[in-house]
Length: 320
Image (cartoon, rainbow, N blue to C red; front, top):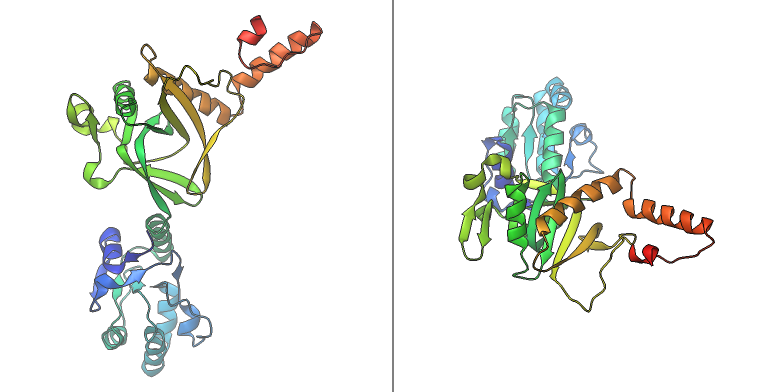
């Protein structure tokens, strides 16, 4: 999202409105940083990040309190003359009457909260980082399997939802079905479902299922990091599939590379079990262990002792 409006910020963070500017719902916040205007209140305006939310903490408030009325009025008049999105008073601090007067003059929104300044700054920045993060939409299913976020993609009808349903039955959790909204927050990919279809799943031949109602709250999760992408595709006898797992394949999402596996689907293959094993194997790799590398090393060591040289493409190469 490129921006968030001030009224949406107020609603999501449950802020108290002291003065509501006309057209507040149209005021856009596009910067994820906030500003504590200590220097502007001291009179230095050469560098002023007026496009950010302005937060008044105890330090700024005590300084302003120490000023006489006329000087404090001039300083706030100078600050509020700039098109700031809004000003938030933290810690339940009293809003100076002249601030409200000037807010009316310049049509600025003034807010208040009981949250301490440090916690407020962290809360606002984390919120803005998330809502302003780059995002994309992917057709697929996002599930949590053994603590890993697995995005299952593939052609329509290949069995993505059916695989996810079997995984849910085994105790894993659904995040999103059919439409996955992906955000990039601080270099990490997070996926969730659009709110209107959250926790609903479509199964051909049955229809729409409410997973939360069927399996309980333990079978769902609102959001998950994307650690692995698994593409399901119909079995192609002419295609050579990876049989060792030595070559890492990645898919790029919002500029970030995510490990990707391609799993061929055909009758008799238990796709859900394969996804579970893929999740366990991916976790092992994260911890520094790679079964394919260990097997290759053992085979090469054994053949070296026998004076053989071999280029492994599958376990069959060892037995041949």
